[in-house]
Length: 265
Image (cartoon, rainbow, N blue to C red; front, side):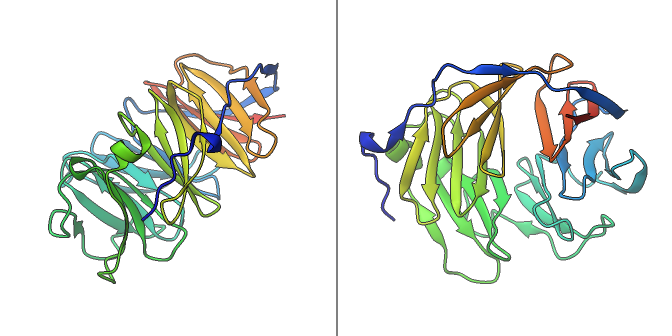
């Protein structure tokens, strides 16, 4: 695959920004220390706590739970398809799928058996039954499917991007966003050609909704309009936020102690 590295494609997002003050109404919260969390489009929250996976509905009521004692650790929960959740374990190098009741759907995928050396990032694609994986040992990003041996692959990703560390992958609008907190956010098309670059360093976590890129930087939340490149800072109601999950006017703020749920206006 081709990967353009022309400097003329780079978009500098280091602009002067204003602060936005929302009215935050706290709805509920849960205690879950050092939890792995995810939010689906129906505002169901999924989180791990003491070797158990929980599903909480939008009102804060627990709907389902499932023991995950067979896992040494769950690295990520992907909820792109609420009917087919994906769990990824970096330690065990496996992927598992659950339905909306947290019931196992199919056999666990062992990534070592699929020819990967060491995968440390895995996200579902908008393309059915396909997953983006970052094989860090081999510095490659692959669009993988268990059902077909044919794969889209971007080789030597560190060299092509000049990246040092990749902490997050996000697919949005047929583009792949690659976060390197030491460099910024690289944006590629699904064939591996670089579309643009956002010069935003020290980014901890990003989410994209309606062409607005929200990003957490040093405990502060910002949003960037991907069309106009206008950037604003959101004043948060609490400190020590390490992750956020936004769906419309609902925002879930995760701290080392748990998750606080708010409605914003």
